[in-house]
Length: 196
Image (cartoon, rainbow, N blue to C red):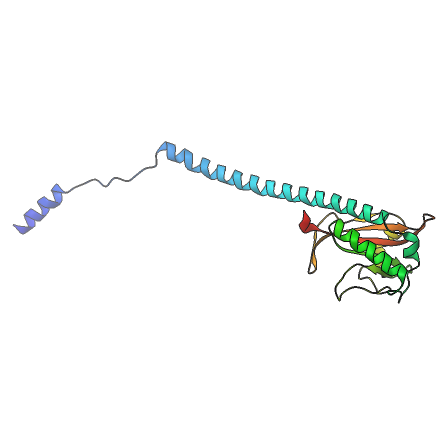
């Protein structure tokens, strides 16, 4: 009797298990949503890169302009008179004071003059006011080949931000001419990229 009632109970409980099927609407919406999300991500990345490139481009132009103004204010004849050990001379101190003022005014992080013997580059006036300030005649870390064109009269400007341990900079190098128009040195300007 127990068996019979069990069978009857089982028969009475024959329930069809419904499997949920996705509606056509859901089948269409899910891939569309995924595509929309992917498009938004791609557009966001593209917009970020475009804005970043635009900011760097603006920074390069600002750095070039700051260097152009700074080099026009430097007395090339006074720069030509620099020699190792002249840091206490009136000539050096006058140049240093003027260059530090320009550096602060134009958003330049580091500004210095350079000269060469044709194979090695040396510091002239370095406006750094810390213990790292280079003395006249200290060897410059970049090779002569890199700046040879500048010593021959052609400007050089980085078209990227250089992320260094001393700061994020855009470096511009401009020839310094004496009163006769002869290139006697180079002005190095490391423009502060954080001012962008």
